[in-house]
Length: 239
Image 1 (cartoon, rainbow, N blue to C red):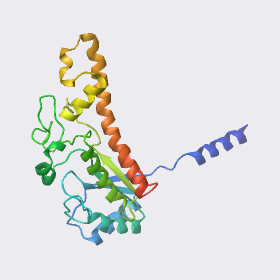
Image 2 (cartoon, rainbow, N blue to C red):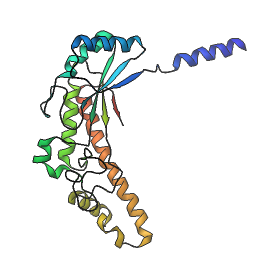
Image 3 (tube, one colour):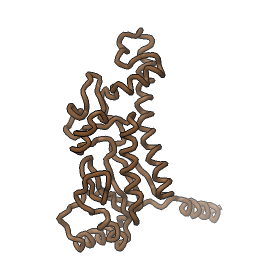
Image 4 (cartoon, rainbow, N blue to C red):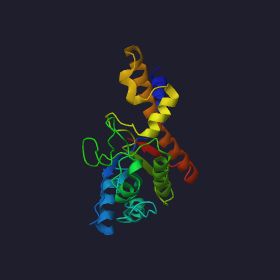
């Protein structure tokens, strides 16, 4: 019996997935490659297995992008240094908030609209950088997908992390296109819920929430498919 229990315990240990320790990193562009190498070596010595580095925070890229304004090719410099230290390197990017001046100027229609008809480009919720794009727009889905496709093509990158892949927790998504699509699906413009019988409002509001969730899911599905075509097997994570 003791032998059986011991054997089962060993088997359980063997099938447990190996956990990895990662750290979040906002890169300092002041550090030299030698300083960065020392940091990475220290992290690995401390039991860290990988770095999740913020390389796009809604405006400028810290990698060689053809889609975004480039502040620094930090990622391409850091990846071989991380490899030398024995660390994985994951790219952490913002998904829906976009403070890129070119996008704000040329594509104000890409931004989400709240229930008062105000655009997130001009009236962001909560904090100034909450300029959330509208996930229902095909152009927005292509924009996010193209950024990820660029990242997936960088040699040595071991993962992509989508941050802010969601809607802010306010009444949002009331652009004309989304309203028309939902009205075609449900028979009711979401701006007109208050005029519906009380018995119908809960059902409509739940359907409207599900519709909004589907738009975000569609972006993730597009990103996943793009990554699979560019780098099959590259891990994709989100928050």
